[in-house]
Image (cartoon, rainbow, N blue to C red; front, side, top):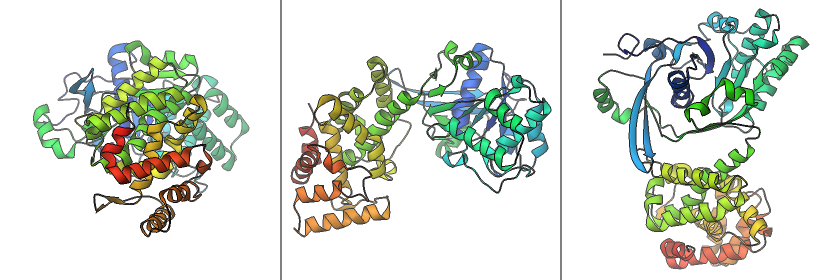
Length: 483
């Protein structure tokens, strides 16, 4: 039995009010899940039309299943392992603008359409000067969006009441502002009327947003077991974690139109999302990045094993609560709740997150995710955060490219790897001391954009930790920086 509206007894059809660019795992496990809950619990009464942003995708499968699919949420919930599933029923149909361009543009004619949501990858919000208004369709997502907006502007004679609430979910900073700027560039490239540009700016609301939910996607390895459990065939099963966070920078009136708070969804409408972005980057991403070299050299391979190990688990927890949280400005209770959720997410028994997959480009990640915490901690406490500095020392040893005699498959810029190779070769040949090695690494502008060698006390403390790790091993050295 295949999943579709004939076999799903609770199927319901909703009036189309949302246009969604993207049919991938994340949007279906995050945005569509929320809309489904709003429809069922808050009478949101909104159907989603999915638009395939590139010429190949899942629209045929979605249409075959009448927009239905099963979502599994697997992870830690209220301190216990949890695995639950539900059928998501909010997508009305899916359109491929490469073969259905007229049908795509006709979406602009529906007066009830209110929201536009997108996730077309970080590269999706880009300007392609070869896109033309007469293309069917334009190649870029912003080009397609501009054509749709222009169609609506013309169809409703520039009516300011027919603008959209546009919420991009692409993982770039100020994604709403970037999308708006790109749309305006197309207006100018295509020499469209000033009234249209004014309508874009005044009748439409482009919201910056931040999304957070781990979505492993289609459970290929376990799909036969899942199909048997469900009792029906579903080619669009998707898996995610229970945790979710959507921060949307928008006027208060939009929170009323998208009443997520009324049913307890962790969707926040704020005036400034910068503190939330900083919180995520410093706590979630910063913990990942600072954990990797310490845990991997300790002999561990996955995130879950790291936080469940007594030594590394304590190291990660103390790093977050004692050294990262004190550098942030949101309410302490809110920060500690977020951090506790992060640790639960790290322990998720249903996700195998390899440390080496996080290690990609670790230097640039350390600079953007961890170094700001070091600098801010020193500024506020007038001392260096020992565990974060210890992570930097471990990172330098990690880039030696060896663990217990086995080669580490380092993945970073070739110039960065060459710099580490040379400095470690000089040390092995006894041409330089550990202090010299650390100084060479910290002042290398190929590696760092900032003058981190000039941070007071940092080179000497890093050198102490590098020597401790090399002499006593990661296990004993890590214990030395714990309380």
